[in-house]
Length: 141
Image (cartoon, rainbow, N blue to C red; front, side):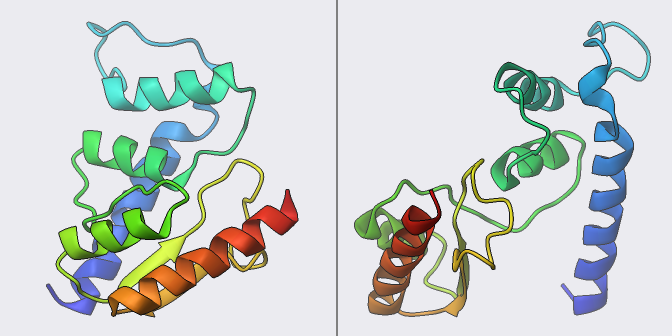
């Protein structure tokens, strides 16, 4: 897949997410039989956001909504706060260079919190960098 195709699909995906999410959190859930109804995955994401009284959709939630809307996304793995699990996920994804990001409702701007590590491509680097990201994130909370 070319870089241009990836950018186009990302742009299309963001537009679909914005169109569907917009201010949807303020609207009631739509019946599954209604024409133009939102996907079940999207409704699930909104329900979680409403229940937790938050206005931010986390990355893994956005991916779910996008995938339910038919948008292709890159392979990903949601990992708990553990270096061993990060290495296992890295291997599962094919040991290709990865981006590692902290997922937290308390940390929306991950880069500012030291919670983003890019282009990691070795088991030892993945393990050490996830530990650094976790330490940085813990200092924010």
